[in-house]
Image (cartoon, rainbow, N blue to C red; front, side, top):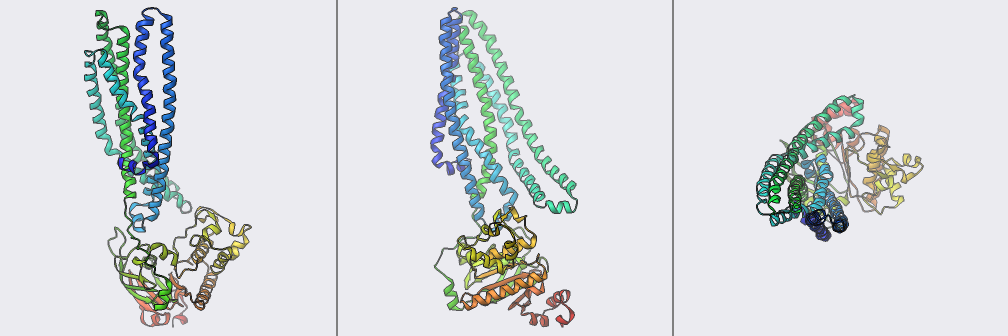
Length: 588
């Protein structure tokens, strides 16, 4: 936790100084207060001196006002430090998450990352605020009260020597049992977030299959597991206050019993006994609050380790330095657009490779079709081209250079990807389309929409390009969302376009019009000397049959490479796929 605080303290360092100093003023007045009360009793009450009582009362009021003012200053410093550092932590966490590779994200899990950005940072904010406000108050108050009490009477101080170790033992015993529960509680909270996220994102599917009751049972189970751990921690923590107050009250009784006899002998005054009791109470109360602070700091320490785990994670995809390589060099050299050399890849924690020994070349401006059954590795090949993952073996070359030698920003600027899972973000149609090129003109956006067969329904919207887009694009149909994502990938004129099952939600007529528009765009780009290389990942033969090269995938291996006609003659798997989708005479 200290390492995380050092990392983000920066400009907030002065709040960690001014806040405790202000709190120190309040503590000093708290330590002096019992002495003023003792003087009030001994001088004013015992001597029936009303003026003395009023004078001492005025001093107490003045000390209270100054103490409250110092407390307000400290509260503001604590708020500025905790909220500022919490905001910086969230900002840095979010930036780090965006730097992580897909493999890293798979390892952490989305629900866990959400919990770390929200709940774990909240725990750190609470710990920082209490550190500024209370960390100096209670230890200083405990030590100061103990020293003041011993200065009043050393013999009565024996009560301190008995009560303090007892409270310390109870505190240690409870903390030793509680600490392991805190990390477990955070893990259970991750599980609750996972179930909740699945239920909210899949609400339509849940309702369509009438699984509301089952999902409630699943959520109740996750919430019950988390609450069971939280209750166990609460039960242990609840032991602290009753036991410490019991010890404290027994100590007060012992002081009053022995103090009464000391007053009779004249060694102490009544006011000094009252002051001693006040110091005793302050000391033991301070120990109680210190115990509560340790509970908070222990939870924050568990959260800090989870935050540091993300911040310290080195992205699996190392970003290469920009060596000044550009597309002109690739065009002059005649390098192929895509080259796979013995490529294999295995997902994290998987028992077998997703793809194995993939080798092919695609010339600049060509079209590659990838077809195969579900789970054959089609989408994995597309992810390797855009370097969402790094190959476990072999190499993937894009425009004559290994993807690992590309600066990631330049690679992603050259490759347009339409993912299988359609994702739009809240905003407008225009803001979504400008993801690849923030400076794209409206004319460029309309041109991309025309190619993607989305211009018609966007024009039908009263606001046109400024039509609002809800989170996830829920205010558009599945086919409309898919066409908008295709248009988004086309904005900025990418050199390589990867369409991962991008037309699965389109009807056959719209799909055919989209393929014609893409071919026309490729011819236009070729005439302009900016060839467009296209990769089409699909389960439809109609989507890949016109490709220059078709790769047939089965169980992670390329079982066929060639044109549509060649594969009909040489690849049994491709013939089976065609037979299931095309008319008999077409296959013949």
